[in-house]
Length: 540
Image (cartoon, rainbow, N blue to C red; front, side, top):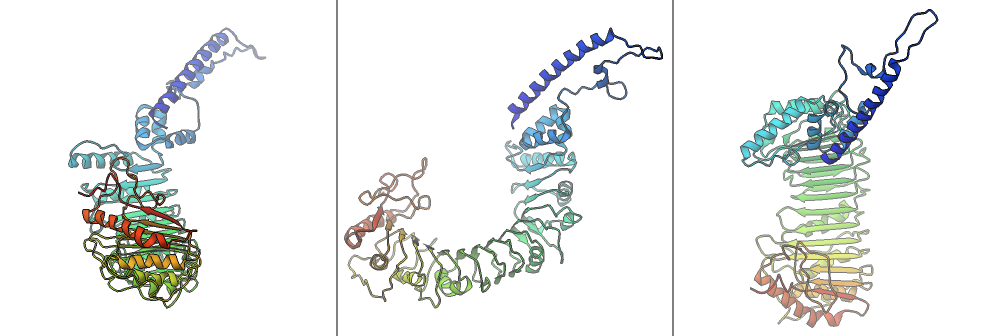
């Protein structure tokens, strides 16, 4: 409800009050002419109802609205934004009383509309505004507290603690604290504020750039369903003590927590279904016994991964951060660590060795995506894309295979001038494979061999998509064979920018398709080919 709706409501209140006053005035005139005579002979004057509106002390009420319960006014106010609610409180005594119980305290530069120029001025105004609002707040009825400060805003730790003490009261459900960078060495979240029943109603906690040291036996977050820690100083023992008592926990996200060496999740967290661990580079062990962990995303260094013998993890997204051989790690470690996988995404910045044959199998894997990217350096030119058949052989129930390759420099053995070695590896029939996409398809000899191998051995294949351009803004939309162009996928900025070498390579890849691929496509398979954009990818 915005200010327009509020003004409409106030106008209706004034009309209702005017009609009520006119009716009371008419009733007063009528009763002033009538007197009743009781049995004892005394005379009683009936007091007009209008006078009954007078408050104690003889002052007449100035209230101009319907006599609604206080909780109704609080509900009306809660439907407004923080900005509109504050303005309403400044023009109405009724809303002012309810404002002191406003439930959704969302303090950011955007919500407080601090658009003035000058970082120092914005920081001072932001801190002053937050302090004024929280100082005048009763602390009653708070459901959400979000404190988000820009990087140039310096907040005093004592003042921050006072704000948290006002807002974190019984009944609060969400606490988000987004501090400027490098605050984690300056500020420690006061866990004592969660004692005394104040933490039992919290469902979501998000902390950034601070220290968080819950004591042993910390049992104050019984209702917590989501915990998100970013750039937070917390040890494995402290985190274990915290989550082991959060029986309602469903989602746990840890990012850039550089004090974590091990992460252990106990068996009794039966509701935990989603786990994200990213850029915790000191982490060495991840051990989860949570029986219903369904999705796991990992971005970091090599770790010893243990998800339990009866792991229910079905979705896994993994990348060894800025280190080579993520594919090697995935095919040697994951079949035994996560035997029930159904979808797997592996990202690699470089593969120094070819992908070996797997010792174990992904017996339930249905969706596999491999993303190869070589940031500042080219992906290893000696890598044999045909070795990715190891993943296909290890996945007897695989239905969808997507390979995306981003190469900044096209250095590889071209299929032109070299003989293809189709059938050079033992042929396994991939009887369940129905959909294959290769994004960033190029003229590399081993990539052409991989494509031909799939066409010959995927007996249930329904569609093959070959996209000669890797565009991070457009991966998935295809056109029928015969239309090798692509439409601009960005309405205003066009397709993604790529180098001249990659545009030339895309045209070479189109030649490869016409010479080596089209003749091998079975009649039942739909071939989709995409080339460079005629508008955005012109050769300079």
